[in-house]
Length: 234
Image (cartoon, rainbow, N blue to C red; front, side, top):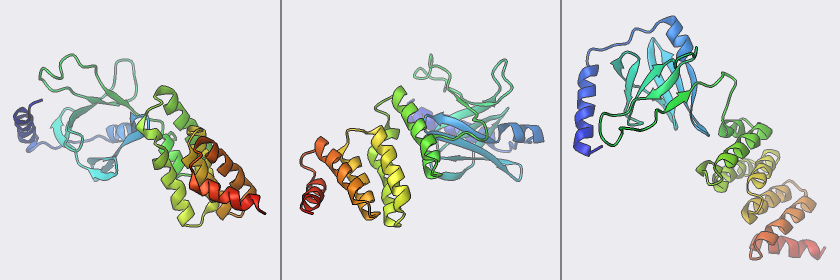
């Protein structure tokens, strides 16, 4: 979409929105509140306050959609027009993207974000909640679908473990690095981090074993060389 056309469409939407307010039923609030799967590791959370609809998405805690009528909204943070709809034969709402009326969007497949069960989470949520087995299961499922997914970035996952190390919470640091080693089994960086966590926790044997693995995948790993050299002299 050309920039001028985009701003024209946005202006029309804002004009349409002026004076429009949604009158939500208790049933609609109940059926639409919750988390919707935006992608393999991100959700859109829908909630209501004082009969007003808000979204949480990518760290933004209170996104206020522009109401256009008929359960349709413009989300400026996403640069998308969306609607709450119930697909034929379904009892559950989905968030459906509404394509723009221009040549670039014509012929595009409909994009729907499905509502998750209340107990469902994505991999990063399980990781934050220290449910490591479920987090690993989620990350491996992402890896199976797309081995190059940005959600599998070993350094992003390691940050969780490094924060635990900083807080001297070695038990959880070890669990995070172990998880990461199963996602990235040939990364010397991950094994080096795991070895360091074991060392800080007083388990020099496990530190030694994991530094040996790190050195296997990177013979130039200085931390591994130094630790192994000192350990072998004991």
